[in-house]
Image 1: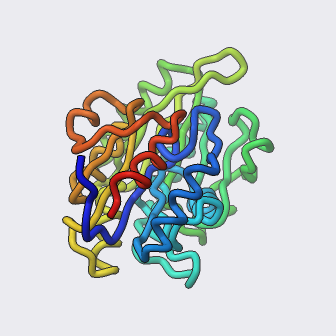
Image 2: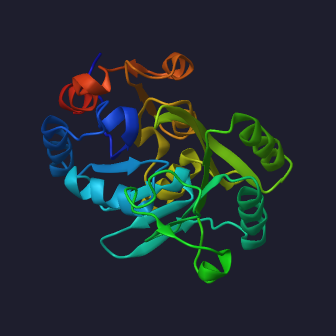
Length: 269
């Protein structure tokens, strides 16, 4: 493949893409990003994770000052402390889901710009830096960009999925599983409908006055599909979802082989 010319911005997913299977950021990826930003090309990290996490990792990775977090619900300039775009959830709908989770003993995480809050049904609350709250009323004056509902109770989580699908203004952006204490724990990420990382990219491109064909994104998960729709060149990791790989213009090495650095070092003019 020939090197790409006239690229002005590169969007990079975090989990399964920039970080390895142990969720660590390798020096070789940091160095590659630094070389790109030294060429006056923006590098923007995009994730379903919290704003604070994305901003902190962006600084570690030598990336640019823009962060796309909460599955696209927030686009933030941490250098100027400025929201480029945000989409906060309706408090009444959050309260409805909160009450359902309390009644059914499901974990509930609330992601705001600067803090994470959760109920007392979460696994390892303290270890995850989540502040426990007893009532939604404790944070009713804080914008909520994303909620994550979690439990090992599969039937109750399936009921919840049906419930969320019946609320027109909400969207289940990501469904994942993790093994915790020898249990399969389900995680449902919920944002406003029409919110995704692709729409966030669209807002940032417009803000920076950059054309779609001047942009690249690198991802691995099915929720990166919307990102692919909004950029000029699409890169999938070797470890990516098979459907995402079918849509890619190029498949780089896996996240455990520093596929981000491989692509940046070899194919950006």
